Length: 421
Image (spheres, rainbow, N blue to C red):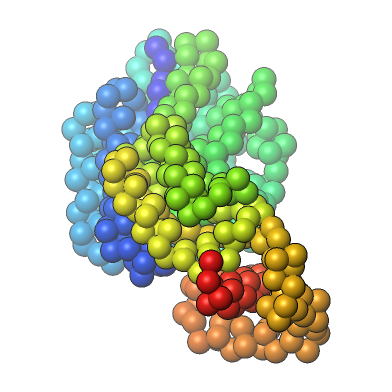
């Protein structure tokens, strides 16, 4: 008889919002509830598919959670699985290593929370069925700079061994190293399936010996976690072959919408162009809500007005989004450039723009002053927001240079706007 389980990770229940909460209260409400709603979908999917188990590979919470509302919500959802005879296997990752909820919450007997010492749990499947063993190990502390693979027990001979691990593997963009190990190490471990967590982008690696799955996350939380989000439905057949199916669970899907506005003749054309792109994108998104960050680019005589009136354009798109249905605008950005500013305005404004580009922005003294200001501002921010200016010196300088370019373009746009369209 086949063995089936649902594999997910990085749920980040009740993860705190940052910039969204400041810009749009309605949108922040949608996103703040999305992690819970997507988790309910995970539980619903377990029940609909009548799986044998749910595997949670770390970061169920976002930190040292103390909210009893979160505790009650989780207990209620796992109780639904318990009543259906579905087991749950949980490891703690870097975000929930210190979670008081995981340590203190009384779980149903069907829930196994692995501790800081590796354990192997043999699953009683009855006579005539191949044996299955779940191996798991939780983070004892938020940081795990060394590989944890050697701490796992050797695979049980003749059984189908499933390893649950929270790891950054060899490293990934926007993810620090946690319990690093290589795909080759996992392939040679003797485990038939590795249920991983930590990296928020989905990946599947299969060979004759093993299947290694990083399921991504069931729900994105901001624009840096854009794209469809899902879980993995895993079926181990009687011949021990493995089938992995991706099932989408996102409630709100973040998307970057890049639009070339070079062909827009006037403001009406521009609004129509952007509206049409939003309308075309909506049916391609399976999630209940689409949260779009609109990024305009291209060469256009409207570049100055776009910069000046981004707030008006955003209002137009928010209105259009409500008409389309459950379409939200996270932000509208522009990198548009004037198509003929020098030829048309061969005067003081054109000269100013040229001086800014050639002399001011490239000035070493100016760049040093900007970095000093940015470092002072960064020191006044909460620790969790300081990476906004970059995680190292090089990225700080790149970010500041980008702010300077955008700011100078904004100044020129407003000055030109004062001359009339």
